Each structure stands twice: as structure tokens, then as C-alpha cells.
Image 1 (cartoon, rainbow, N blue to C red):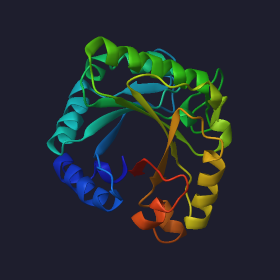
Image 2: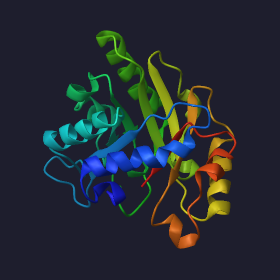
Image 3: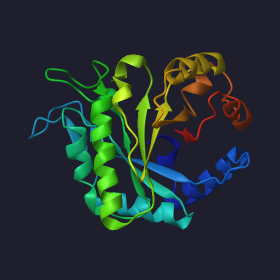
Image 4: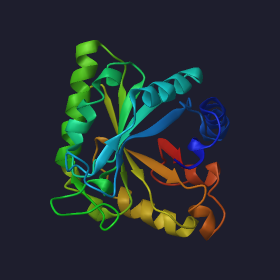
Length: 237
């Protein structure tokens, strides 16, 4: 989706490396490709889950592109009415690899009777913690490096009871703040959604090439790094 879907994956991955360099700020930058592998749908489908999955070849192609730049792949889940943990488990073939993590999109997690694109979905800290525990078990079982678990949030109601998110060995949990707008509005959203960040959760920040630009200039790396707390994960869409 977005810019990542334009042109060759190799070109986009190499561009990602260039865009990421100004964010080093004394730290090592790790490139990340985030692929929406489970995609919410406007119709229920045969199983009534309101979601579809990309083909295994698509996942393989994105993982290969990430590896070309020594990066990692995050498998993003828009669950519809499916369960987050069930969807994540369906990608275990890739999650047993050392360079594959998970991203969760709870605004697309629908409850009974809810229809995607009609309402904002939501999840709980407990559901996110279940996924983290599962990833930790994979890391331990296969003796893997740390895995990233990102969850996206653009308003408080989308994730409730965040205090239920705990630390899990081998898993780095990140909240990606997704608010759209100008620098002032995005900073307000950032402050609101990070002020009670659980100890187990690292801060992440999202920039939208098109949507943010409709409200003013895209925030620069220097401006993003000036946010407090300072983001550990920066995502461009």
C-alpha cells in the first residue's frame, strides 16, 4: 500500500535505507518493511471473518527485499472479525525465521455485528499480550534473535487496558502512534497516546506521505527525533 506499493520492492527497500539514515542519532538504524498480509475486507467472505490473506509468494517476496538491505519484515494483521492470535499463528512458517516480526492494526479489529470501514475497531492490552507471549515462545523454541511486535493506534479507544501488556523475553513491543495531520496536531496525538505508556512498550511514530502533506509540510527527521519520548520506531506510509 502507499509508496511501498510503487515500483520494484528492491528500489523501495533501498529508498528506505536512505530515508532512515538521518534517524540514526547515535543509534544503529534497522530497515523494516511492513507488509499488510491479512487485509480487512468490506464483505464477510466464506468464513464470515471480513478479511483475506495475501499469497505465500507475496510474503516471500517482501522478506527477500528486506533481506537485501539487512532489514526485517513485519507481517501486519488487519483482522476483521478474526482473532489476532489466530491470524498471527497462520504465519508461523515465516515467524520461525530470525528476521520476521508482527504488526497489529486494531482499528480493523471488528466486534460482533461491526462492519469494517463503518466503525473504528478496537482491541485490548490482553489480546496484544497474548500475541507477545506466543512470539516469545517461538523465539525460545527456535533460539532466535529478538522479534518486534508493533501495534498501531490513532485514538485512545482503539486499545484499552494497555497495562495488561507485559514484558516477554525475546520480544520488543512498540506502539506506533498513527495520527494524521500537521505537526501540531500530530504532536498532540503523540503526547496523548504516549503519556501513560506501559513500561513494556516502546514508542513509535508514523508519517503519511500523502495524508500528512494535505495539512502542511511532512515532519522532518529532526522534528520527529525532538518528540518526547523519542521514538524507537519510525514508519512511513
